[in-house]
Length: 119
Image (cartoon, rainbow, N blue to C red; front, side, top):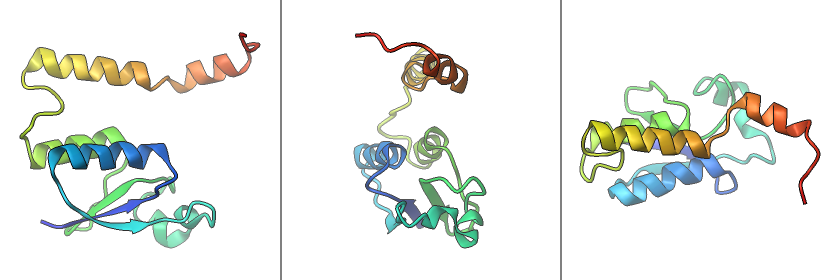
């Protein structure tokens, strides 16, 4: 199966997927999406991701996947070795926990936006 990854070198979420793919040794074709020109917001691109966000891998079957962690899980299932999401239940739980810590919830971001900056 071949996959085309809609990517942008400027954005952090595609970087996560690129690092994951490199660690897995998975090569995919890439299409660079120009965020400055808002190519991700075009009607054509929104057929791949209705939210107009990147990254988006598009497999041969045309069913695109969104959200960087879900994308990484997809590739983990395609190529289980080496297991980057953990080898057993406890390891997988630790990975999920650590991933949750690094991605603050939208509610926390809204809360923090109203707080004065600490110096």
